Length: 412
Image 1 (cartoon, rainbow, N blue to C red):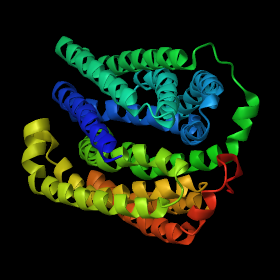
Image 2: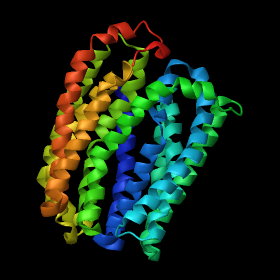
Image 3: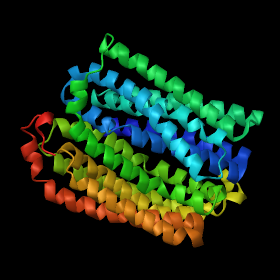
């Protein structure tokens, strides 16, 4: 597993390096205000994906890891969910966002509707690849899609197409990646799979809990973007986006570990808690060192990479780093809870986290802008870490029992 984690981490570093390059290019060509609008729409599209996935991303991996024969119907269900649910959810969310009022024009907001279906299928389809152990193929596809987005973004930046040009480049890359993923998965199934309402409904118990947790987790990480846009405007969102982008790079470490760890824990329940603790300790130590180095060089890096006009992002980044350490360890610990059936109490933990970040954001953003958003995010992430750890200690005795149960028999 260590070798797979290492290769996954290296691939994801390359992926995020491409994302970082896109951030720098967009910052240079469209400035803080344009960058804020771009980041707002991307965040909105990601929120739509979180609402539209129905928890199937976690359920897909969980179920196909236990029974590969489910790959065909799960693929068909994922495709229909992406097209129908993704489009419908995107239309509603964009309409509400536009009516509430933001500093982002309707034409720019509408890109979120186009982005939602391919991004949603990408999430659901790659979860199937991970479940059947095709992590190497997943890495190649993800890296390729990001490189394509980088090349297209550079071209639209040079051409001076503005915010909509960058969003169009991201949309084109997303559509291409989703189409290629679908073709490869169809070849893997060896036929034309049909959707199954029975399999869909059987996975809903697990998926519903995963769905709620994914939404709450996303809101904890990104809800301050919407508060910033509403209270302070796109420029402050632009500052926060830079800090968030750096944080996203660091959390590649726990994301890579979790990607490999989860299906392994599902298949091998004996010793699951010990494996989780070992992975969490290593992850926490590595991320702590990375955050310390990042904090030390944050100011010169931000000014050099993004320009001196983004200097306010430095303080926001400093305050995000404690939360990055917390969420990294939380990510690994959560794989253990997911492998023993996703206890309902975990939903409550993330709900508390969202309440904490929104309360902190409302109190701090009006006076401190992006920095206030970062402070409230870190406080909420530390709180969630302690609550998840307490829940793990409560459920660790269940790991041995789960070893003799099939995935469909795991209690919720």
